[in-house]
Figure 1: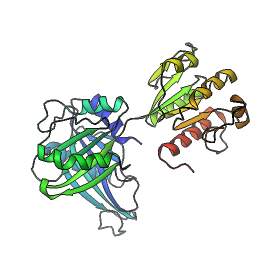
Figure 2: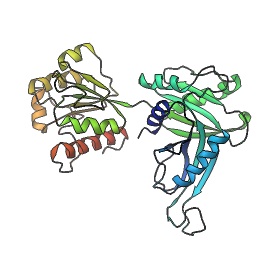
Figure 3: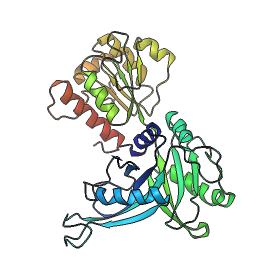
Figure 4: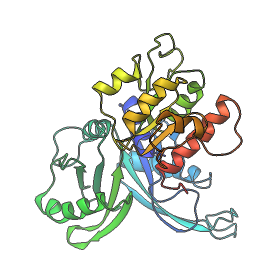
Length: 349
């Protein structure tokens, strides 16, 4: 899940409030969430997200208020491995130790040496489909927090001390290209440890078709952090009444849309128009692009016929969805989203 993106949107929604962001930065053994998992706690006590199965949240909520009031981060270690009731685990019997960094957050935050709020700038980069990497000093002392924000397009998003930029920027660039989402680097010359994090945009999901079977699919995809665009010429179907959660509704013929718009090879695409000719046209247009996920509703034999006499590439998903014996739009939607998540999380077989 894209924890940071949804928490950023919550901060923007409550832009006058102060928050604490809890980030799992290390796990020894097993744990409910992996390093990089985040939880946002508001000064009014409301919580967004989880970083455990409920073992840590009560204590974290208390610590978060300290962080907010004092405007000072804390690094916490929770050892959940012991079954001794005197231990922090309180008999939970979990098999891991979790290190959590809790830091003050607010939408209008201005990093040192930067004249304007940084999070609206980060949001703009993410909404353009580009990643942002950040290096931040993690310490519990009173030294000024240092941040270096770097976008996938090669831009430094905020002013920073020259010595920090010279030492951290090469490492941050390598981190952005490493495939990691979080890392900790020791930099004694700069005053301790630095946390490297990668903030990623939502994956683009294009759905061609706006039938009733798409409604639960679009809703679930939005909840799972996909940026959903639906393309269908029927304005009486392709509208907010049936799809209130999607990001873009395009009441247009797919043929026209594809002539005027480019679909990125990083995108996820579902073809669900229920029209043989339309499906054929869309599929032929998209095969050369080779999206990250390209799936066609219906049995594979039908999909093969869509591009006869050319053979159907093995990369095309058809039928779409994991084979869980799904029946009805809701269950089929779950099977499709499960397959999309497997691809997104690089867990497909």
